[in-house]
Structure formats: C-alpha cells, structure tokens
Length: 108
Image (cartoon, rainbow, N blue to C red; front, side, top):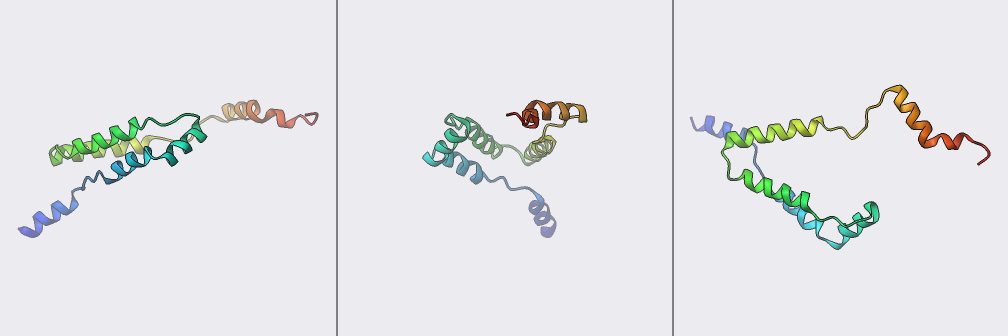
C-alpha cells in the first residue's frame, strides 16, 4: 500500500515558485532594466513577472486536482503559441517585397 501512495505522489507535479521569484528579483536589477531600455526603448515595470509569482503562490493554496487541471491548461496554451507569423505564399511575397524590395533597385 505504501508503495502505491508513494508512486502517485511521485507522479504529482511539484509547484516551485523559485523560478518566478528569481525572475522578479532579476527584473528589478539595473542590468535587466538597462537591457530592456536598450532593446525596447523603455524600462520594464515587472508586472508580468509579479503576476506570475502571485499565480504560482496561489497554486500552493489549491487542491492537487485543481493544480493539475490549471497546469495542464497552461501547458496547452503555451504549446499553442507560435513565435512565427504564418503567411500564405502570396502574403509572404508581398511582405518581403514591401520590406526588402528597395534592395533590388541598383540605383540606390
């Protein structure tokens, strides 16, 4: 019996907020803020990282079944995100010409 309960508890996901806390801590560092200013042109207010930490801490107060359901939904949502914009061949061709078409002109 004890091996069965240990097996199920080992299969459960451990929710650790260490990464969220570290990300929030790093967000307030001068290095990160200057990096964001250089790349994006403005400082990061760290609200996304704070809400991630808050969400993680709130998971600690929920039942295991609720946590599993929430984590599964988050994984599905993250898997559905694409970093690329999918375009048809015509859309890609017109976008390419609009962006890089001026390079075809030898007079420039």
